[in-house]
Image 1 (cartoon, rainbow, N blue to C red):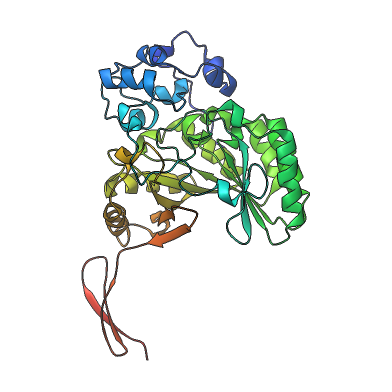
Image 2: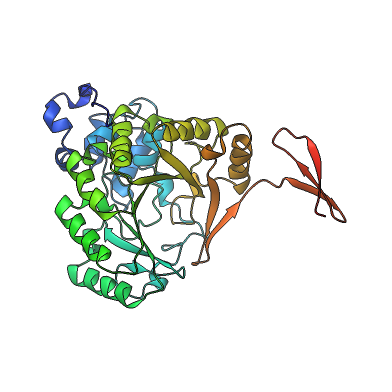
Length: 371
């Protein structure tokens, strides 16, 4: 049963909003904080943040809801670090790339990336409620001139219809839930009309940054297009609010299969205990931790990237210490279009003929005979 929403609590900084407005996703979208002056009304910006708001070219947008989760006095707040620009974004390292995963070079039709044999990635929108500072598609996300044209979507759908090897389509962006219910349903219906497409997936951060978007009307529509998988993007326990829980519960009760893709971010969540708390909360709300991503080699995000050893340390801090359901795949999406590879701690510590020696999560050693 879908839980009853908690009474609407409007932060003091947005006291002019009525409860109905605060709960309306369209109001949240229209009132996004888009400038340094907007942010300064709710945060005590540092000189660096003020400078970055003027100089960083990547779009700035923060929903009032997501801004309300920030510590107004602490620039190291994990929510604030994900959404408020700093001048570190102006530093582009030699190894960084505008299109780090070579998505454009695997694009047989506008707005469609087909890299893996049986699945494809369709860009439905380049708009998001919040423009995450670690975004790997900042080359086009937030740029209205790069949004897919209806003719381009038609070409992408025609390609999918002609390629029977594709059985799984991930609808992403930007964020597909930035579309109206009507436009999103039109797209899902067109995809469902292609007989060989068995699985549809939506990649959305709306449950995190704009949970008001997950309305009863939206989930009633989504229910018509199963099997439908929804992958969301929680990065920190501070994002685990009553509003976010309600969004996940509505999606799960509508029959959507929920997974979460966390990006490992320095100074935000590069700690095993933080990831453990996040993942246990997600499981409680029927969302399976799916991937822990190493941050990509996108331009201007070096300050977010951790050593790979940090991700391995997190996985080792989870495995055996909590349910396997709470242990995601730790993944590096290889630059240049190499695809995803999974990494894990090395538990095989020795081999003598057919005798393998392993260590377990507690550091104890056990022999296993291959026979």
